[in-house]
Every structure is written in structure tokens, then in C-alpha cells.
Image (cartoon, rainbow, N blue to C red; front, top):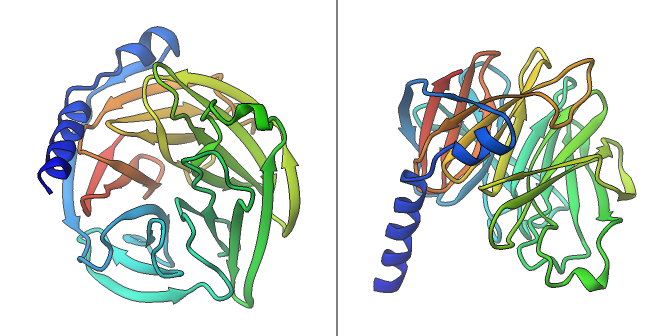
Length: 275
């Protein structure tokens, strides 16, 4: 217990003292310092939340627990009050990491956590009105020789125009490689190659796209990065803002509207920020 508390203290210290200097110098972001407001805290039954998507009305969100949790989603508001539970039939929470939602109301659950880089059952569950479908995939650029190159974990994605955009998380030391993969939003089995890549000095843990489709957000441990989307193309070519947020183990992010973002951490706290 003492060792675990020491780990949490050191982790909190690391995120609190992080900066956007690397991203500004190497990825060409502009530093931004908007006000961050704490709005609430999840109940204890949501002890390790890892993903967010908007629910049926403004100010309400779907979330879930991380690996090993029950295969269900929880509807909460910005204060952390829980209002509903949504089962995800015929699914297993091996390592659920993020949520996405399309314009038809389908919810996508990313069971693609891959800390050891050894999983061969990466799955996205598509939870619709009539049931659950499965989108299975593998990284075509990953080979057995990459067992020590731990860049094939994923904790972040969003939906746009019948496609799912996935952002990987690196466990290698030093600068962190993030790759962008694109999948169809239809059930099937896919092998995908990266569409783009970039280096950060932080691990990407969540993603979302703005309602108007003009920008997207990536959250890391301690930072929030905003990219622009030009001509409908999602890539790393238009960095806009980097915001130091601290706030411990931040792992989930969602756009409330085109200028307001809600994010949470695994210590159950909920925050909002105007970008």
C-alpha cells in the first residue's frame, strides 16, 4: 500500500510539472492557458473510468470502467450523478479504453487496450438500437519482431463520416510515437496501416472530434492538444493549441460543444474547459 501511494504521488507530481514545451518546439503547437473548472466526481462504482461520449442530451455522458469492469455503460452528468446503465450484450471488457458515437446514435466501445503489445483480439463493439456488432482489427505494420517496440497500444478514437480514427499510445522511453489508423465503422475483420504519425512527450489516452467537424482533441497525462481538420482530412498537419492541464491520470475527453471540452481522470474527477 505504501509503495502504491508513493507511485500515485510521483505520478501526480509528474503530471503537475509537465509542460507543452516539447509540443510547441517540435509539433508546432501554440501554448494556451484557459481556465479549468472542476464540475464533479463520479460515484465509487465508476472507479476507473477511461472513456467518454455524449449521451442523448446536452450535459449528459456515457462512460465505463477500464479493464475487467462489467460490460456496461453508465450515464452521468457533469456533476457525476449517475442516471442510467446500458448493457452491452455479447461483449467482454478485456480492456475497454474509449467511446465514440456516430450521428445515428450508435455507440462504439474500444476494447483495444494493449499494454503488453501481445493481443490478437482487438475489438470495437458497435452498440446500436437493435444489438451489438463487432469490428475486429489488427495492425498490419506490427510483426513478431516488434515485441519490444511497444507502440501498438490504443486508448483513443472518434467517429467521422463512416470511419473510426484510432490514435495509438507508446510505452517506449523518451519521446512518444502516436500513429493514426482508420477503420470502417461496419462489422468485419480488418488489417490496417497507419495513415499518419507524430511524436509527443506524453502518451495519448483519449480523443474526440468537435460537433462541427473542424477540429479534434487528444488528451494525454497532463496535456490537452487541439488539431484543426482541413478539407475533411484528419491528420497531424494542423496543430492549434496545447494546454497544460495536470489533474493526475487524465484518460477521457469529449466535446460538449464546439468550444467547450469535458475531461475526466481515473481519480473520478470531472473537469470542463473553454478552448
